[in-house]
Amino acid sequence: MSGFRRAHGVLDIYLRSVISGCALFLFLFTVPILAKWILIGRWKPQRIRIWSLAYVRFWVVKTLVRRNPIVLFTGSPLFNLYLRALGAKVGRGVVILSTHVPICTDLLSIGEGTVIRKDSFINGYQAHAGFHPRGPDHHREERGDQRGDGHRHRHLDGRRDPAGPRLLAALRAGRARRPTLAR
Image (cartoon, rainbow, N blue to C red):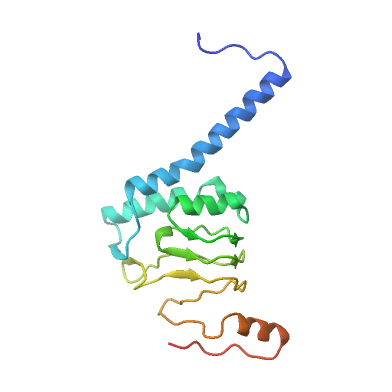
């Protein structure tokens, strides 16, 4: 082969391995991003009938996004960069420890200084009676500024957590019980 030369020595083999690994990681990092923007564009609030062509596109993007090796970098700024490239609005100082990667990222907004715990699920969609509704009318993930409790501000049916950070401080001090959520 005319374009390739033989590796000479351990250092040459090591450098080629590092360059090949970085190129492979970059490729695996960008494929889900490109697939999302080519197949879906921006996620919009809508209902997708199960097993329609739109659902197949949703499934392909979901599979690529969830199988990406970037999940190994949760908690790092690289993971936040990945979510931003997928269309999420991620504030400064956000730490996401969850390995459950959100799919409908254009419908996701995370405020500055928020910490999302490792056991949190951030889908951005839900399946219901043969449909996948997405968007603020159905399911919107909002995480607020410096809450640190790992709970959603807005729940599936539009309820909001009324007390915010004051409730978290009172719960930690043992002075309060978690109230029922207001509409």
